Length: 169
Ligand SMILES: Nc1ncnc2c1ncn2[C@@H]1O[C@H](COP(=O)(O)OP(=O)(O)O)[C@@H](O)[C@H]1O
Ligand SMILES: [Mg+2]
Image (cartoon, rainbow, N blue to C red; front, side, top):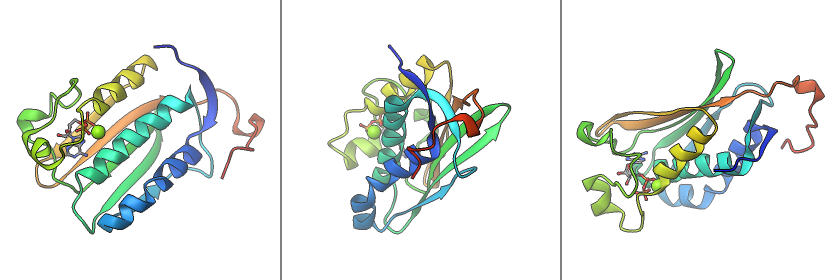
């Protein structure tokens, strides 16, 4: 996979991506709560691919959430990295399936019944993108309680002050 790395503000990409789901959130009465560190937070990554990763994770979170629930997107700076978490209170993933959700075409039995459209490719592409960056993605889930996906990103080496903030929202 060829990456086009650049420094960009992950906060504005998260806000932008979350706003594209407004319609679907309204339909299911789902709220997206953002807990982002800093006004802006610069990472070094392929912006388009990372946007796709966030899109895939939020898309799943909405798909597998109950009506009237909240999805939380949180960023944390730790050990010189930026961690992005997408957490829902949806159907969760059965213990026996957790090791397979990143496999190509894998869908749990419940989701196969509920959602006929999904191909089961989103998470395998998502992990491929994160691994191409030399980073990691993990999942924590309890069936019937909810699911959290967390991935890491490299922080930009530049000082925030030196970066053009024109793309901030
Ligand atoms: N947030 C989530 N909550 C519950 N199950 C999930 C969640 N995200 C992914 N899964 C499970 O992992 C499977 C694979 O996800 P994905 O690769 O995105 O495929 P798709 O969205 O096309 O079903 C899903 O079909 C579902 O069974
Ligand atoms: Mg998906």
